[in-house]
Image (tube, rainbow, N blue to C red):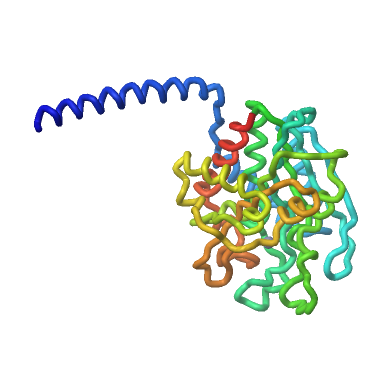
Length: 329
Ligand SMILES: [Zn+2]
């Protein structure tokens, strides 16, 4: 028994060694894909720089100035930049100057992946526990700036080391101008959200635009955030959900990217899926234990400021996105 056991142990060891050697060889052939290290300090700074403009509500001076900042950043990081301007009408009948900002990398490649986030912020803190705040604009550190901040850091990495494919980074405008809760409309108002992405999906920045898939980031910087597999994403782009969650797991980030179904979210990925017909997922904070909101209790309140932003969350999302796009061939 003892001998057999020892022999077995030896056998297993050598077996394990040869397996390890094989694994090392595989790793060596795969090593040509070097995934850059995401820098959460940079991403945090890009979030803060947006917040420092103040609320980026459509029609405001802060919105104008932040738009210029974002376009200049993408340009400085080597993207071919498009400013797509449009007059879009809000739920209240106001026509506002919208601006989708697009940075294209390797624009001639037919093999493309789309990364997106909204850069406008909500004009009304209509989920604030204090009713007196409902008509005040939010700072949108998490709801708006976090996704854009992560993608600016991705852009910086794209300039330093090009992946095998083309990438388009789109900052959508006027996602968060949807009918406020205090308006008490009786009609279905889902179309009053995501105005910038609806516009782009009907009229992309280049003719016959296409991408393999898209990844939308929204509310990706909150402390203690978790990301669940969102319903619309599963409906239109389940293989992409699986790809992204697999990448996160490989990085040991399954505490952030939880293997559970979340709810259905009306976000910029809806028009990208339904109008542009590009399979697009939403990485969006989903906290099923939230008291005020499943998007975090500071969602659409005056508390959505830099205090809620955690570098660890930015890191988890940013590194996962890099892991996915650098492994595309
Ligand atoms: Zn929002």
